[in-house]
Length: 191
Image (cartoon, rainbow, N blue to C red; front, top):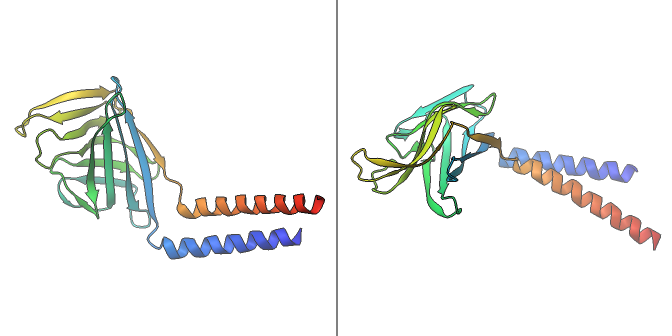
């Protein structure tokens, strides 16, 4: 029994050391998913430094963001064919004049206006916009003159989920390995 506690202590210490070495900025990554009434969908992720971010993150327009480090989104048609992928924010810089993002870090919810995806001046690009909780639309630009077509929409519902931290996953894998190792030892002892 003492041997098991020694192994658990060693695994915990290793996990803490790896976490401290690999995650000094305390970046947090979240996924989001949206499904339109006609079956089109948007899926993506965003990240920010949770040690410096305020309770409310509001970002807008092209250029350096205040708190977001990254935001990417992919759009799919009802048959799950990829329509386009956009890195709306990369390295703390927004690529779109129309970018709008509002997020509550304490409740992990998006709110108010949202405009992500295209917006870089390419005819045919896709963008996702509207008001969370009211109406969100997936649109495609037609001519870069303000004309676009709505491909799908919903009542403003969008889901956000936290991505498991690598150190947490490493700890789970280590405990699983410990369990397998213990089972093998017991099996060998009984043979």
